[in-house]
Amino acid sequence: MALSKYESTRETTNFARIARAILGPCADVLRDVLTKEISPPELKRELHKYLLNCKTPPISQKQKQLVNNGDYSKFDISLIYFLLRNTCSIPPHPKGWGTPPDPSDKSLSANVERIRFLRNEWGHSTDLSLTEPDFERNWKNIFEIVKDLEGYLGTATVYQDALKKLKICCMDPDSIELYIQKLLIVEQLENDFTNLKEEVEQIKKHVMVEPACPMGTVIYN
Image 1: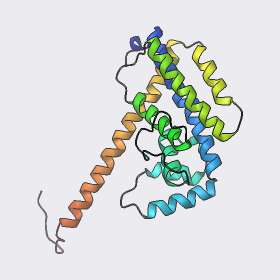
Image 2 (image 1 turned 135 degrees about the vertical axis):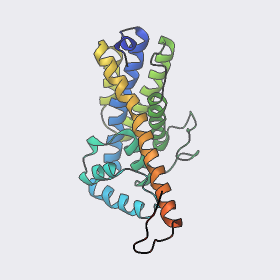
Image 3 (image 1 turned 60 degrees about the vertical axis):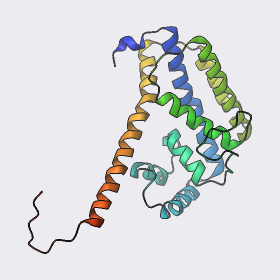
């Protein structure tokens, strides 16, 4: 993308701050929740049990390796959400995993869900600018989610303090481009993995219906 799209206008800077908030404090607080919910050895065992019941892998081989390595700091929001939902004993919010929770719902699963929707919403955005009123509204929403999750963790206000600094810190054009690209690249990775799974399914179907060829038979396409 041309750098002109990331010139330091108020609107593009607002978008970049949202991107930093999602990729930074939102992701980090989810990692802390995962750390509290399950240890790396337990996570590895639970993931193995879960995958045994899956006909097609819901996560990539690279993601499985990350789990096996046990370094939560390497997990992105998508992987953390998947693990919290499927390997931990967190009750789903009343509307169920995968759906937007009720605005008044302050449960752990509701706030985990909200961060996933934030990442999806902004990661798939085509408008890379944000007006001041929209920025303030979205920033307040993000802050409340992080505040609730830190309340659940029972720790200090580390991520709330980080958000306060992010909201007013200086951002140059290069950093604006960097954080926007980091957020938007998630969409391409998701599309690539989805396409790969579809190709694998097509190959499986083809193999199941294709009759075996006698030895020496020549196949012409």
